[in-house]
Image 1 (cartoon, protein in one colour):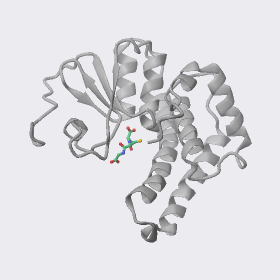
Image 2: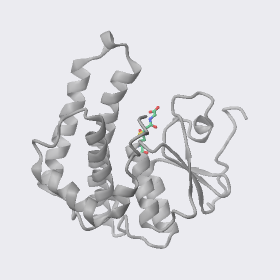
Image 3: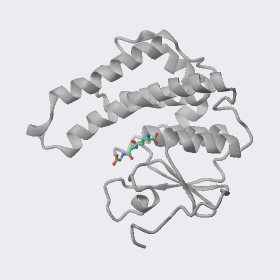
Image 4: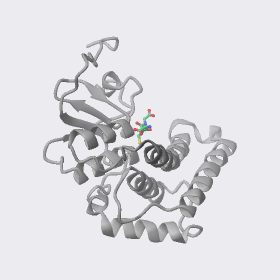
Length: 221
Ligand SMILES: N[C@@H](CCC(=O)N[C@@H](CS)C(=O)NCC(=O)O)C(=O)O
């Protein structure tokens, strides 16, 4: 298979979900794994781990961006990114409970979910700074730039917290971003954000899929 081959021959129809390419550590993959649990699809979608750094992994053919998560459908077509996958699964399952339909509510909810995703994006860039650069190349300016995004986004979330008892695209995205901060610790967020700490505890008590999708201790990358 060469990389120019069209792996997404779209003919106006998509079939059901089959395979999720992700890792057990990706915060964006975790969003989708929570959605799969919540939508009752865990028996039908297999997880196939992907290595984003491995040039020979078929991931780069499935998603030219080489990013996870990536959802393979029964007909071989492929969806990304996490938001697109969650929206598709929400509709496909007939549950329609993770993203609202009404135009205003939908725009608001997706904007808040984008803000939560931005926390994970910035945290990931900080982790990559250490992973892809030699130690003498690491830029404190760049790390501070990302810290600023995380800090402002956490404060904005805290001023307008989603309902921790409602699992939707916002609470899933926020919980996964905070879970990632707890693991990788690009910033120490807990001391400054007591309300978010309580929010995460409440969400974790209300939504069992959060604990179920926790990275197993032995998995470190
Ligand atoms: N906007 C994407 C972000 C996905 C993303 O950044 N995934 C990371 C892993 S957590 C990745 O694949 N990184 C590999 C790379 O950027 O090369 C989504 O929501 O799915």
